[in-house]
Amino acid sequence: LHLSLRRQRQMCIRDRASSLTDLNDPFEATYIDNIERALALFESVFGANIKDVKKYWEELILFKNNIGIYSLALSQADYPDNELMWAHYANSHKGFCIEYDIEKLQDSENYTFDVNRMKIEYKNEPPIIGLDDIYNKDGFLIKMFGTKSKSWEYENEIRLIYSTSKRKEYNPFALKSIYFGLNMDEKHQMQIIEGLANRAVSYTHLTLPTKA
Image 1: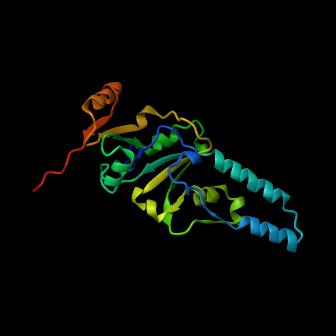
Image 2 (image 1 turned 45 degrees about the vertical axis):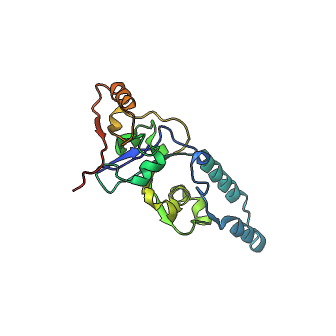
């Protein structure tokens, strides 16, 4: 699925919050580790007891491995116009794009404090994780899951980060629109429309621009 933004509304790629290992970028959550070196320095030079710090760091790593990621993206237009996104995530326009109200989508979680929303920053170098990040979970999350390589910048991604990875139930009123790809089978389009009958959902079948 491709995704898009119309004013304050985003599109959701997935119907579940994926685990880190499910994502298509093997370099996800890559970082420069300054923690191990700093801990070793504190222990050898200053004779500090680093047991509690190491324990908290291990808990953060465990938390990292259990989180769920809902990948979304923003569009520069008021419809899903990114050709690469359609090619990569919608089977070359044979699929469709779903538009959600991002606020309602985020609030669908029973405990909203379990959800973090973040806009991806694209950088040439991975983030540096240091001792000051250990006790700052929000900052840790942003560095770990809110940073990607410049190669992915075309996706213009935004994410919902959940405390667990699993299928998520969403508020039915979060669903706003569905965009059918240029090459999507009409039979499949009708199946979706009939399946969402009596819902306040708009449908658009994308077409090639008319030549002047």
